Amino acid sequence: MGNRRRAIAAAGSAMTVLLLAAGCGSGEGGAREVTAVRPAGAEQALGDGYDSGYGSADSADAPADAAGAASAPAGRLSVREIPEVGSVVTDGAGATLYRFDKDTAQPPRSNCAADCATLWPPVPANDAQVTAGIDAGLLGAVDRPDGTRQLTLGGWPVYRYAKDTRAGEAKGEGVGGTWHALAADGKKAADKAAGKAAGKQAGEAAGHTEGGGELSAATDAKLGKILVNSEGRTLYRFDKDSAWPMKFGCLDACLNTWKPAAAVDKEKVSGIPAELVGSVERPDGSEQLTIDCWPVYLFTGDTAPGQTNGHGKQGLWFAVNDAGKKVPAAG
Image 1 (cartoon, rainbow, N blue to C red):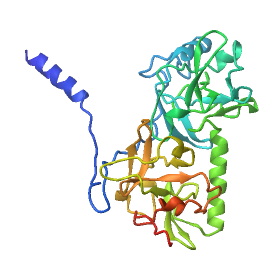
Image 2 (cartoon, helix red, strand yellow; image 1 turned 120 degrees about the horizontal axis):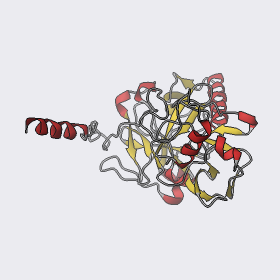
Image 3 (cartoon, rainbow, N blue to C red; image 1 turned 180 degrees about the vertical axis):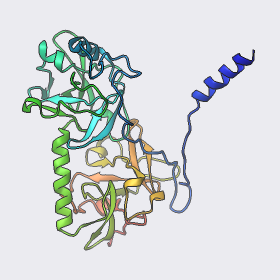
Image 4 (tube, one colour; image 1 turned 90 degrees about the horizontal axis):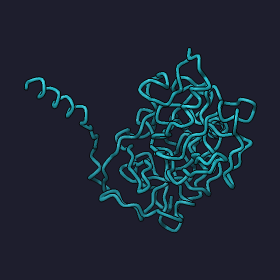
């Protein structure tokens, strides 16, 4: 009887979920803070605790492993930083996901079959979920010649690479000049990384950014200190949103112009108190960055680092200062 009680107690402990919340209920309104999703953890063999059939680095049966990978569900997609590649989408086991230049996104079509699909196993469309930084609306599916349905991201068919044997590897990046690790928006992660580096250099050359990391303060000639993302792009808040109770005023067609900013790691912010930084789950399940409990956005009309074209739009959209408050319209 004692052993049985101990077993039940252990099971109950294993199922306990710890929820972290912080004080978003004072000042200019507040909202529940949701801890930002972090990148995948320490490297492990893709087969560890995951029956995908990837095998390990010393597996002698690569074709069988690839066949198993082809049938493995995508699981919970997340974004992971991989050195020399950039911010890459990975599956639930931490395997890097890829796109193929010879495929098409509009309309979605896969041109990788037979031997190609053995080396580059297509990811099934079923069971895919997203975490912070990935828009669930970008997920889709395409019918393959064999009748199976393949996951798409931003219209691009999604693959794994059979020679990636450990979580966090991206050996498939640049293979044949046609295979590339996927970014969260379906574009090439390496291209996004190059653009981010160029944007940072441009901002620094203009004396725009101060500090660094995923979120920082910048000095604008007209608006003063404002918050920008890692690419130097201005962050905005919307008066039709609210912080407490949490309410999203930017939905549907609004999101074509104003893109929810992705959640960030609090340890990688500068120029603003870390306690003002949080995240909130949107109706589509994605995580959005919050500043002083207000959801913040990027404006598609800002086409280069340092621009503030969205400030004062419709009398409802405003840049955010280094104290977490909106910058007055008069600037």
